[in-house]
Length: 316
Image (cartoon, rainbow, N blue to C red; front, side, top):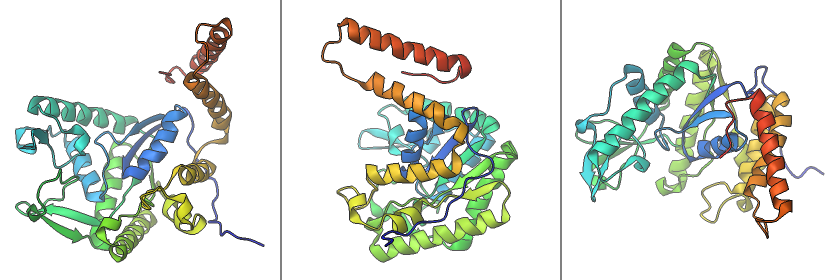
């Protein structure tokens, strides 16, 4: 008796290895994938501008990066004793205007350099609902607790989303034609928008993504959303908020992602790195014992062996 449906998956021809560079952009679910890549010491750059839920927010920032259009005083505003920028996540908000602008421009140029060398870009949109500033009609990445009356809430149409996603693909390929773009729709449920509204939003995103990759080169789709909805059809795979996938679900989807996108040649090294990470996180009963010092020396020798072959791999 089969008690679970499985989405057919097959490994991609060109998979991610330790010599590849990745840039990950999008919703909080891309953070889950990015943290796994970081744990296993892949060369990845995760959400440099913070969490971005809407495709237009991603495009706005990538266009600014491509134009090398620095953030200025006109791009920030003061509210609740902190300076904010509508284009980025609240992680950048700061009591100092000079600091927020310096931090934003530092990241802007870092992303500009990253796009020149990147092999894979993972993009995970979370919602098709956009918040537009009423006075400019520009989509914001974050409302920063500004009163709701300052925004129009709009469900972006499939054609509008497709134009946005296609612009992202074209922009990335202007930097590097060989870069592979992996789209995956976030399985996080945006229930604050409403149950029906969340489903409409995901449907718009799914249609727009598939219409985009149908016509674009080096563009792919990984079914995170479908795995959560169809393979993990149970609330025990959600956190207590019933919105976010829990650790079991994240690990499950990560294993599926590995199956499709991670080069099997990398898995042996991933196993060694996992042992090192667990060893570094281990809390001994007696940190001054000879046994523990021998254990630490063994870990350091493993790290040195790995770094001889992969100098870019660093352990904190």
